[in-house]
Image (cartoon, rainbow, N blue to C red; front, side, top):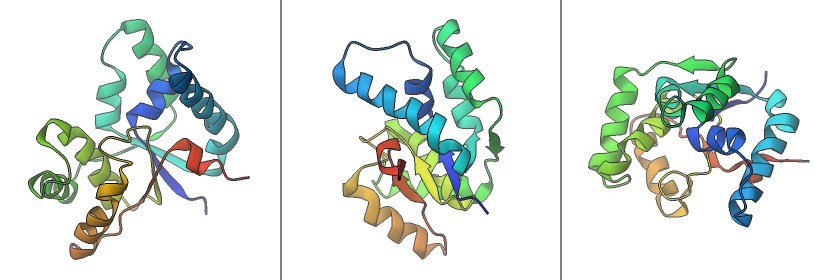
Length: 157
């Protein structure tokens, strides 16, 4: 059985974006492409309706490329349990209100039993400051949070 990975919107955005001149962004784009090509086949990959909504927003040409990237991925449902967990993440101060969508990504991945949550969002999701409190909140609800990581961290040899 393959490990299960929830792919958050930022990874799809880097994957589908036109090449950047910014060195950091270009590095993230290359890693996203490398992970998608070399490692994604090793995982069962999932997204949510939140991802589908986010990849469909903005410039139509870019949105088309992002939608194309996720067309074959399994879509996870928003459940009452994941909605409750996301609300607790925000109410507990682990995610600011303006990042409630990010809390939903984590909540859906957690409630759905994902092994990993793959993201380039290091402000709200892949943030070392909140990892332990997220795990503690999940455990208090008898849930296990996925390993939150960037594509760099999931490029095992």
